[in-house]
Image (cartoon, helix red, strand yellow):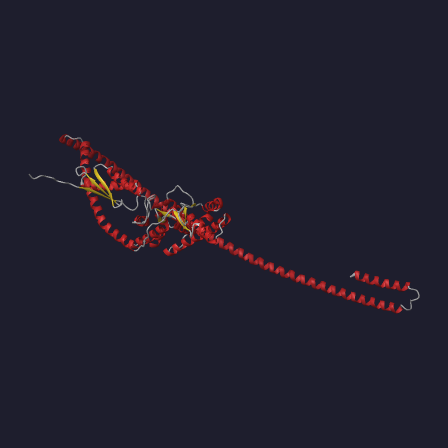
Length: 534
């Protein structure tokens, strides 16, 4: 407040000094001086009032601070009491838990002491029993020694009477029993096999016939070349281009050999890859229709056609799984299925073969009371190993099995794919169903084309396999290699050995030869009695 009074004094003093220095105007300024004094008094009064208000505010602030301090102390005291109560409660609970734990520990210790006492009693009882058993074993040992002595005496007596040693008599008995058991076992095995064949063949034939009757099939007409027809031969020159630039650009872009010869109104597209052949065919069609044929345009059209074929492959894969009612297939497997349309095996379209196998497998599984959907899935995927993105040294069944396992297929489906050509062991009933369905689809007449030389060689190999066995006189492969009839010498092969021989021949064919479907081995033994009446 002192600075306010100082300021007022300074103002008043300045005003007075100013008035006094002005000569000649003292009287005139007397009124002004009087006003200045009044203003100074007024300012001094206001300053006093402001001082009083400031003192009142200060007192109020001190009073409020005291109240806040008391309130905070009260809150702190309440918080302390609350924490103290919680701490005491926690200590009480811990003491209770410790007491309970000590009680349980005491009970367990008491039980352990009781158990230890029981164990000691049982140990004593066991020791008594063990001693008793030891005594009995000693007595039994003495008895066994007596029995062995009596046995040796009896054996010596028998050897003297019979003139055979014990080993000689035993060996002779074993040999006679072995031959008798072998004969009986062979006869029993033959009876079981005959009965199984009578029942199994009828039932299997019924199921397979019903399945085949429900499946529509097509003849194999696939080739390794495509023919592109032209409206006239004038287009050939435009396709070849100046100095062959167009045809070289087309071959480089598609990877297909384009053969332009004297064949009227036709160009031959040759390539082992049907996808590339189809890309070349569609690209040629677009170029000829558009009329603009030059290297730049060729590359552009081939690129667009390649994308179009890739989209078509995905559509084919999706349509196939929808038609078969298969769901949840990995997108990569869908692409592989679509590519099957452009693959063939022995002239049979791979996609058509896989669809047939899926239908047949599903029908067989339904007839046998198994999971038809899982069988269809395995049938569709069984040959995915024949559609490799790159060359592999693995057989197609094992490669397909790896892909199916990689893309999360069911273990039974994985095993069925890998085992359908017996590369691995079958672990479920689904595997033989896929093998049978594959054989039915591939082995039916007209399903596949075979080179005549390989067909004849296979028949010769069948006959030579049978002729390699002792006692075989003649062998004939009939029914297009589906059956092998073996004639044996009756004086060297009896009826029992004939059944064994048929098994050995079929086993060797299965292990050493490659053939579609099944080969039935029939061993024929004929006995002739000839006499002449004179």
